[in-house]
Length: 195
Image (cartoon, rainbow, N blue to C red; front, top):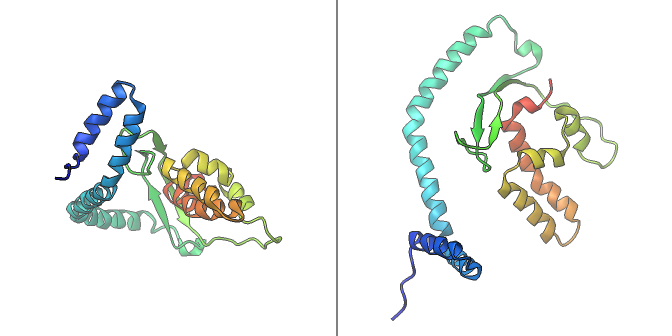
């Protein structure tokens, strides 16, 4: 007869006991067993977020309409198209956890801002070098500084993994892994981009 696998809650309790006793090998072994629950935990979390989004959808739609009406009235004296802008983004001041999720007790503070959406100006390339200089010019921070200050622990680990596992040109692998991270950081923190 096969031994029944412990539940996630049981493993969690066993890890707490082993950790309190300083039994690191047992903590590691139990942690490996917990990995078997990874897909279930991720699926449950995704379902929780889906239900939450569905529950909030009507209220969000109502707020979008109210905001559009208020903004339309407020910007009627400005010719946004005349400024070569197609709209703007608004970010409310809030706190996030290290995964970039809204969290009132999170350690990452995001300052609210409004940023016009204007076409990006592509600089004429000087051959190689990428956009690091442009990023520093527009945000005041280099790619590495943005990653250090704003990337989540998971994002940093993924970029490092790309570097470590590259069979050739590890810097290029890390750079490519960091591109979507930089994009998310800029999107979530429009106040970083200087006008």
